[in-house]
Length: 164
Image 1 (cartoon, rainbow, N blue to C red):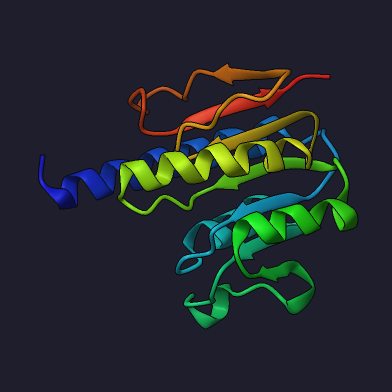
Image 2: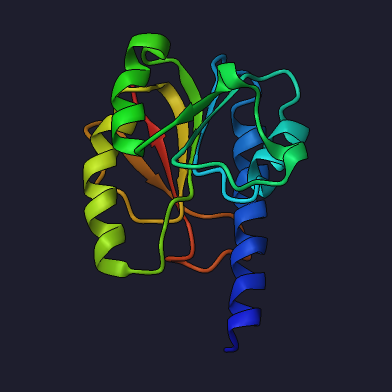
């Protein structure tokens, strides 16, 4: 498969998972956490799908399209491990949805990062909340892995629901 075809499939999978998650949390209160702003595509998509939700974005450095940058109250800049650690004081365990999209293309590096941020994410998601990730996360206690929506290949995206 060409790199272009692979990217198209990744973006289609991402959209399908984000749309599924937005529908899943419609009755669940709490903010959305976007880990990795990138150029702002998924942040913009989440704003459109969940217009009444607060969306907090965690990013090392902003390189997004100017129309896709959150206001300073919702942008947590710095190393994701540090900003996630500090976010607990501000947000508690209230997030209804976490979208983790901070993969680098380096499988070993991604696995190390996922093992470090998984527990930090677990401290921020309310019971019933949903986690979407471009990387396999070490399941925390009470997490249930969820099958991806139809048309999303296994291993392309990972979905979890947080138990009580």
